[in-house]
Length: 311
Ligand code: UDP
Ligand code: MG
Image (cartoon, rainbow, N blue to C red; front, side, top):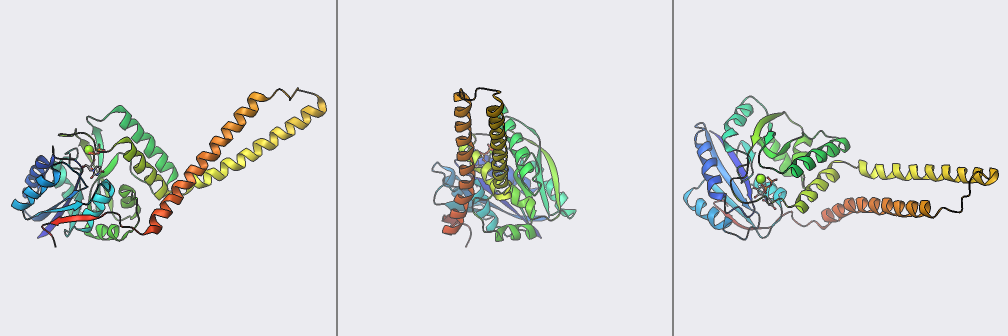
């Protein structure tokens, strides 16, 4: 019998944990030809999330729990979950039921047809702010403009991946992962699957603005070095502009076209503008350097405090 592995990260999800388990379990039991395991990752929540998961794991041997020593972030939680899967296929899903477990069977149908990655594409999104929808749109535009691999729009981490693909992903050792990008990057036979993204069944989003920003920067930096080349382009352009101004000044001086001494405003604007450009360029470079530094320390991506129902 083939086996399904569910990977579900949780960060302060006491309000949804029980319902999540119930709905996922119900949908898995409907798939008569498959065995299953459900791997929950407690990403350092300090509320009742872990207690609830322990309670569930006591009654259900197919439920496995990994608990982190602190919050390491969603991407690290999913990474660790994938490392512990034993199924022929793995499905990554959010705990808040925004990704409805009712569509699992349709995704599996696509897998049975020979597809190796089935990525869920959001047809419509309920209950998300205009701000989030707009920033997401702009982000994917920028990302795809910069990156060499095509990263599908309106796609989160909700996806099904074949064992073969999961094994490849598990071998990638990089930190600050942008998983949805890596899944595109590895290739294999991929198809989209459209679904309606629901509202959270309880609690609030755990992706703060700063977490979203970090993910966006990780996405761009780990998939493109173009920003570095753009800095070079801006530098060359500035040199060109300054040469044009120089020629203009000389010509003005010789032919007495303009009185160039009254230039306070233009000088101040030029000085502050280019100070800004330089500092922004430095910041951009620092983001790359910070990631090199992170990798070179060789610390683990996450620390596991406790495992339940697994060796
Ligand atoms: N999550 C996590 N660690 C974090 C933040 C989020 O494991 O540091 C989990 C969270 O519990 C949920 C999933 O990642 O299962 C997606 O988070 P959320 O629903 O808050 O994000 P949104 O859907 O609002 O983008
Ligand atoms: Mg959510």
